[in-house]
Image 1 (cartoon, rainbow, N blue to C red):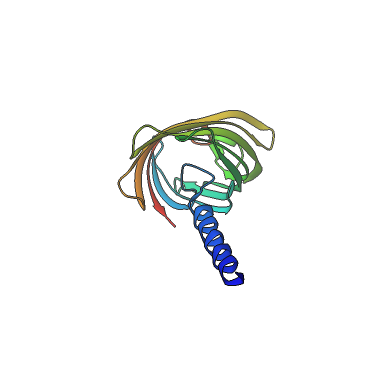
Image 2 (cartoon, one colour; image 1 turned 30 degrees about the horizontal axis):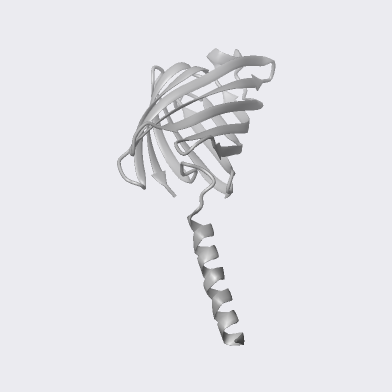
Length: 181
């Protein structure tokens, strides 16, 4: 009798553990490294995101024109499913920027960004999304945003196009490549 109870308990525990591992807290991977090129103005950049909790991640980016300028951001974000095909996201970042035409200063400035967005699957390999946020650097405040489409060629690799609106380099089109880490 004791062996039967023990065997039943082990089977139930293994089924429960296997089921727990298949459940996910989002519809997308938040573990990636990204390379990107901006068009008009021409910028080069990189970014990353790494999950630290089922509903939270750390994120960062750096972009530059290689003209004694930069835009660096580092922060934390949240993500949660809205339904089976969409996630709501948000981020709080510290931003350090040196961009003389935008900030009218030859030195770097530090500030904060807060944003909220959505990611949506349109098909098995096509993702679309967008964000709207508030950027406050020194006494320079503005509303920023972006919209994008991303094609997931494989589970480990995707390419995308993004339109940045009113950001540090003003309005800009970006071509991106992401690799799952």
